[in-house]
Length: 294
Image (cartoon, rainbow, N blue to C red):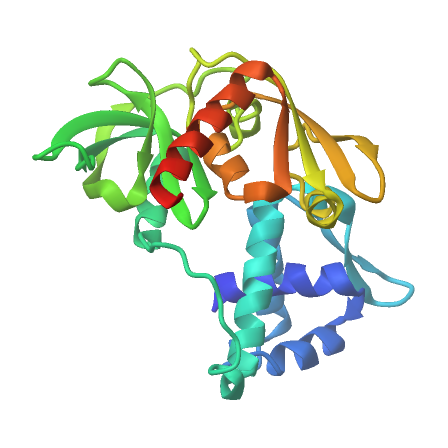
């Protein structure tokens, strides 16, 4: 119960400052509640939450209410926000079991069972021995990997790290990993390297340094553009122009295959304006499609 309460406590205090009594009452209404806890137990779980999220939970002695110091920094952290949103969703689902046939979720492709071992190795800077089965190989192969990052993209988990077999950083899908175990070898995380910087110029998971970074302009019909404006395709997205008919957005990224697929998924709602090379790539695909359907 310790980890469930610690995560729940942070989520709860982000919504409102509360006294210890109010916290106990709110916790008793959650699906995780098992029994009352002592003040010492609460303090121990509070410390676990502080360590886990890198925060300070303080008590205002004037009101006896607990709150999170600098909560804005916590909200701005993508991983921690995702974790808090997930526990909120689980709490809601458990509370509303009678609605299980009326709420449809989008599942991942599984393999979350690998997360504890892989994240433990990442925390300890320990290498992993991996057996991997690519789609285009008849047999799996084994290699030693220094695990750098984990990324969830379009319902699939990916592991990014330095492959000692290939002598370069590569990306591996969790669902193609046949076996994985902790190795004795350790590694040093490259200085100034983080997952946001690594994927900064990418739309999705594909990394192709031979594909140059381009200024890409896409023109969406206004109706679709409103959705794109609300949910940007990439962090570099900028709205260049807008009228009753169209909205033009600009992006700075590598137009790799996954971005190409994303653009095609919008069909006639989008037009590639620039660069010419990317526009021609889409045109060629449309011509091949027309041969199939027309």
